[in-house]
Image 1: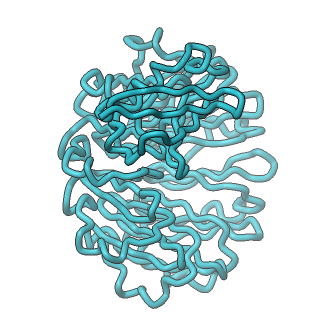
Image 2: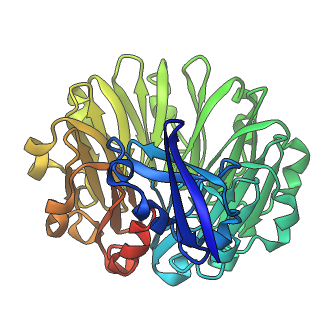
Length: 452
């Protein structure tokens, strides 16, 4: 069947295209005049009459378009491609598309073939650390895949997963915040996947944070509700009377740190993971933000200085660089090290040297740093010119020399346990690191390119 479709850039620029119903959306774009396809510097996306972004790989017939209908062509300034990661797999998507591209270890979410047909208008994708992904669709429902017992199977709560706004994850479980402020959980019971004991308290929830095995929810009145493994932060009874006017909660692997409205910090959970901050309690004043590694915390204070605690070898002791930590803007982490970006866009690191805590080999190149992403044992920094500098354990992504020339105009980076994935401005994805953790993406390159 032939169809006649009108593309509109503006009322003065309408183009009529005839095509067969089995042709895909990319073909329509290719049929447009060159000055339209390269409109401005943007990537061209087609929008249906009802406001949906059309997937380039869909056929005209599958979109539900009718003969003679008009499409709007929207030029986006650069890629909207997003990346999520478990320990051993990546997931790439673009908001509004009906598919997700995954690669890496198939048991850890790298194989999404079983759910591709259920993906409609994907908005967000989140991951448990050790094996599952969950996507929020435009209608507020959720599609999950990966290790069934670790959050990949949400069938038991499927009917409850309506009007989902946000997702948070521990190692093996998910928690979904619904539009009415209630919470739905699934996955490993031992890791926070069962919240029935606090269900009556989970009302008017506005934010959820997690450790490896527990969740902490902030309610509208700024009080806190916790559940999950008690030793990993699931039991906050010892500090409950202090948890008032909570603004932010950050979790390490086994402990929580809560920032109060007055700039003070309250901690609980495993002492070995930073649950005991008594040695620095006097210094924890005028705190603006909290950051965490697996077993340590780092806070930025109003004066731009940093306070750390937790495992000394895992980033909890910043004594060696304390006098250099001035004018700190933000902090990133690997499993056992921290990297702070200063006001002058240089970087200071500390913690385990084999996890990126020693950046001396690239220190001279770390200028104009915009953002930093950490894997388990390495860091990747995006510079102002869009290039990338890496350091840390080579086997964990600390060596990007094989793809160095490809890392240009990088916009964002995500990491698994031992690999990185960089999204470039024009929508290409470049990967490096351990192939078993997603460091090799050639097999899905064409599928990712189809998002353009």
